[in-house]
Length: 210
Image (tube, rainbow, N blue to C red; front, side, top):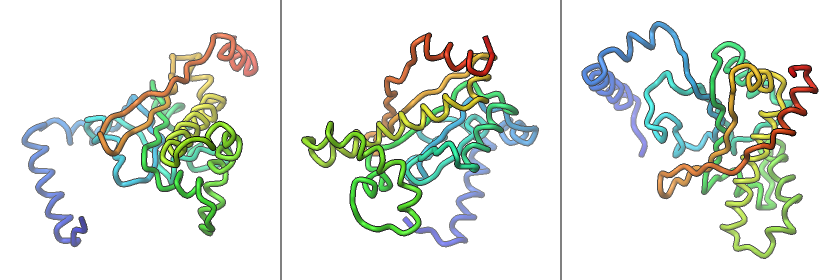
């Protein structure tokens, strides 16, 4: 639905009045600063608003969203968000979340030319190529789900291998999770991405944290 600017501003006023009535301490508390416990890496898709689907008030989730929740280790934008969330906000959980029906993933599965997006989606297309022999027998919609999952797991690996995250994991038990959101049901699903003790210790030893 498209709202004219005047309607957007009016809806904001209504939201402020309703929220202030129901939760009178929320805005004064937010004015003092933020202390979110979650860092959320998600897709820019308008159907995947992190605070709404987690049923959390403002101030609980520090977030970064981009097309197809791609997390290249060389992307200064997402890496800056990660650094601030871990080093300064001391978040306790990092969530990488993809979603069913992702347009970026659909584009990565297709072979059309998308201009600038071709460069951005290159890591997702690489995942498609690496896993195609496992997926070629699947139906198109099943392939899309598998690529969504693979992309989330790739993001989880990138985050876990970051030196700042390794220090946070060692220092205060920072945890990294991979989720998939189903826009058709509203449900989140956690992917199995737990690590063995040896993998964790190996990274800590590499950064002399043991």
